[in-house]
Length: 356
Image (cartoon, rainbow, N blue to C red; front, side, top):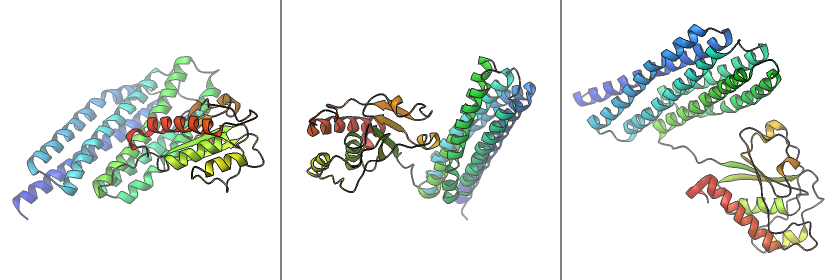
């Protein structure tokens, strides 16, 4: 092996070792912050906060080393991808370290440790987030894209646990001070963000190993109306037709009609959109199923008519169309144009220039 190749390999191994060491520091900080919260150990919480400086210095050192590697070796292909991914991974690890500090600050200010119910949810959420982080960093270190892909699905469980945590906080409202409740809310939010950063680390692992970049987000959108015969099916069809790769679209109603409006079917068919195989759908989503949607859209009346409790990560909209189908004669062209405008505006806002 030539001297140049030995130097390149040694420099790469040094950067890998530093990255693994920072990951270990971050994982320890996260464990300590959660333990301090569960036990009311204010000393441990304070030490965790003070330890963040070491993490920050280490991540800055990785950043410098990666840039120096690029200048010194002028890498291409796999080596260049690894350096680029490592720079971003260091940023993500530093953010997780900041989340650990936020949790530790909460621990130092709580009037008492969480009760049994909150503590159980906290332990479960911390375990899932921590495991995601550990497995993500292992995939990054091993250059294992398949392992990285399997880790990302764990984020769904963390989000479900956060939803459960919000319910637990509601039950604890009568027993805890406002400051405690706010602090615990921040704590659970930080743990969810840990899982988000772990997903990002998985994406860096995949990029470093294969060159694949992060796939564009596909938005789940649900259109709601009074009978699912005209407005919501038309909006769903317009979205599917014009933005097929930007979203996953559905429509439903609390009181679905026996069949789709025949004149609407004829109108849409004339525009190249065949809905003849469709039928009105009943809206019967559970709270956990609703949480899977990014956007809920009411086309008739307030959104509260259909959903009393909007999931935390779901956005609810209320659209006005040119004419209500409750009127004796429906101006399908006016309704179509109004919905097309609203759908296009929404998808361009969500996806920007990437919208179909």
